[in-house]
Length: 117
Image 1: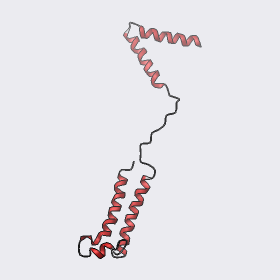
Image 2: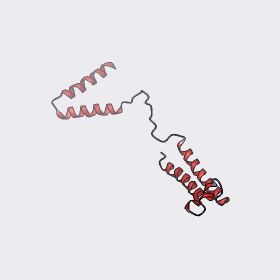
Image 3: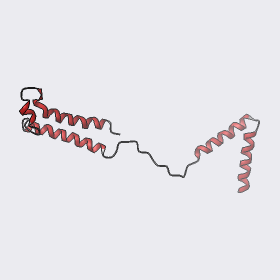
Image 4: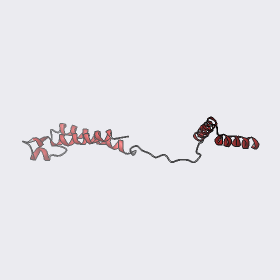
């Protein structure tokens, strides 16, 4: 067995040094094929490239909080969750401030989910 291996190695070395370009090309091709088929037995650590595991659930929670904010605003006609907007800005565009806050919270959650990997 050992003699066969030595004779194969010797034939490959001879083919590489040969003046015949076809033999040299074939030897180089066999060598590159053998190098491609070698498998590393050393375990490699896989690098995680996606988002952390807490990211998607926190964005969904933001969207649910925003939805609940808007529902509470409609149910209590703008008095709750923050009565400030109805008391201090009854005549201007900030009278619907609770709706704006709810939609902003939902948009932050939605835009965060767009960046989730």
